[in-house]
Image (cartoon, rainbow, N blue to C red; front, side, top):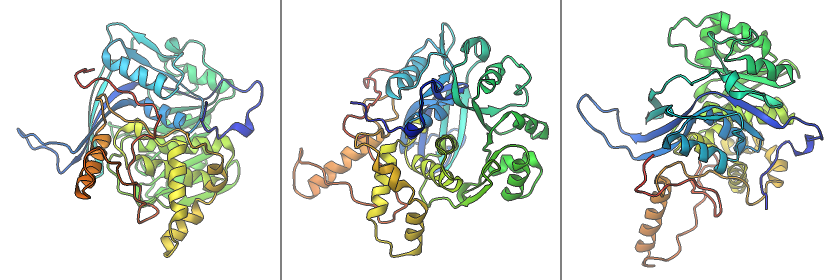
Length: 424
C-alpha cells in the first residue's frame, strides 16, 4: 500500500510534467564524522562520537525533495565501483528517485567527501575527477519538469548554450521554474556578473554571506532588496538569525526566526531548506508558511547524523507537530511556535501513519543512532531490573516544543545496509 504523502495532489492534472523537480550535479559518497571535541592536531588522532555514510552532493537536494513527496529525478554520473553502487541503490531503491537521466561509467570512480563536524561547524576533504562527458550529453532528452534546482556557476552560465547548462535552458524553455542557489567563491572575487543569470531564474536562495558578497551590501536585508530587483523570489538565509524573503510575484515579504535546536550535523541543511521552499512554492502556499516550513525542515535535519539521509519526511514533520501540539503553552516561545506552524494542522491531518521517515545513513549493519538507542534501552532495562529482552521504555516527549528527540526509522521504513564485513 502506497502511503506517500503528496503535497501537490490537489493540483495534479492530466498532461502535467512527468517530474516535479529535476536536479543535476555531482553525487559524492559522503562519510560524515560528528561529535568531535576538537580537530586533531598535527600527528595526532581523535575519535568521533558518530559517523554516517550516504550519497552527498546533488543527492542532498534530490533526497530532501523526494522525502517531501515530490516526484524527483536526478541527472548525475556514477562510477562502477562499490561507492557508486551504494549511492545508486540508496537513491533509486530506498528513496524512489528516478535515475533514468543518470549514467554509470566504467573505470571512473565515484567522488568521495569526508566531512568533519565540530561544535556545529564542518570541514570537508574531497577527492574526485571530472565526469566523462558533459551534463547535456549525459542527460539526453531533458524530462518535462515543474521545476529545476541548480547552483549558479560563473564559468558555466545559464542562457548561453554552455554544454554543461544547455539542458537547463531546454528545461526552462519547456516551462520549468529554475530555483537557484550558489556556492562559496574560493577566488574571493564574488563577481556581480554571476547575478546576470538570475534573469533566467524564478528563485534565488543564497545564504547571507554569499548574498552580501555578490551584492556588495552590509546586511542580509540590504542584500535581499538588491536581489529582489533581479529575480521574482529572493530568499536569504541567515543562520541562527533565520531567513528573509521577498516574492515579487505575490507582493509578499517575510522574516522568520530560526528554531532553537541543538545542531549535531549541519551537512546538507541548506539543501533541505531549499527543498522546503520549493515544495511550498509549487503548492502555492503563502510566503510566510513556505519560509516557516523550510526552516522547520532544515532544523529537523541538523539534529540527525547523516547528511542527505537526515532530511525529514512527512512522517517526521507530522511527529514533530503532534509533539508540539501536546506541549503546554506556558511561555511565549511555545505559543509562538504553535502560532507560526498552525498551518500544519490541515496538512498533517492528511499525512498517513506510514508516511516517509528518515532512514539510517550508514553502510554498516546498524547505524550509530540505532546502536546507541539499543544500548540506552538495554541500560534502562537493566537499571529497572527488567532483564535482557524486555521492551524498551517509550520515547519521552521533549521538554521544549522546539527540542527534537532523535529517532530510528519507523517499523517498515526502508534502510539501505550492507553486512558489517562488507566495505564499499
